[in-house]
Image (cartoon, rainbow, N blue to C red; front, side, top):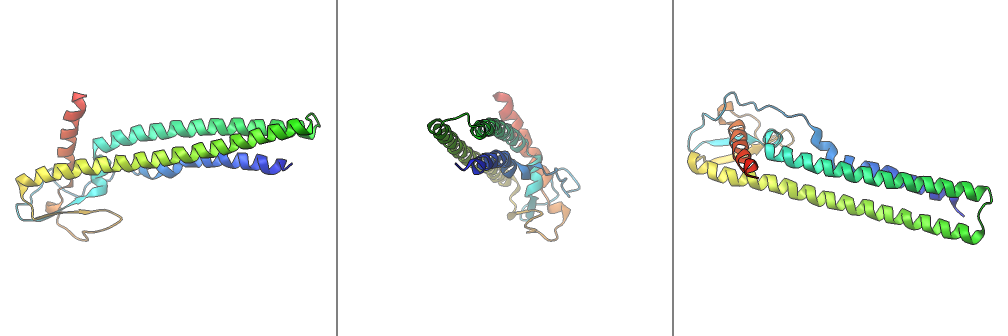
Length: 204
C-alpha cells in the first residue's frame, strides 16, 4: 500500500485549504490612499472633463468596506472549517499508518480503512474546490454591486453638474497622467456616495 503518498496527499490538501482564502482576500488589505484633490467638492464647471481616482474612491466607500468585511469574515470561517477537516483527516491518516506499520490490521481491514481515507480525501478536495468557486462568485457579485452603485450615483450627479466627461484613473492604469486637482472630483463623489449609503444603511 502506498502509505507515504497517502499521508503526503492529505497534507497537501490541508495546505491548499489554508491558501484558499489568501488567494481571494489577500489583495484587499491595501491601505487607503488619500485623494490628491485639495478641496472637498470640485471647482470644475459644466462642460469640463473631470476625473476620479477609482482605487481611492473604492477604498473610502463605506458600502465597499462593509461588504468586503462581511465577505472576509465568511471566507475566514470557510478556511477555518477546511483546515479543521484537513487536520482531522491528516491525524486519522497517521493513525492508520501507525497501525499498519505495527501489523495491527488485517489486509481486508487495512484496505477498507485506506479506501475510506482516500474517499474522505477526495470529498475534502471537492469541498475546497466548491467553496473556492462560491467565494469567487460572491466576490464577483460584490464588485459588480459596488460598481453599479457608483455608476448609478454618477449618472444622477452629472445631471446637476453637466460635465462633458468623467474619466477614471488608478495607480495601475494611469489613464490621467497629468490633471489639475480642480478637475479631480474623487472626494466629492466619495462624500456623496457615503452620505447616500448611510441613509440606506440606517433604514435597515
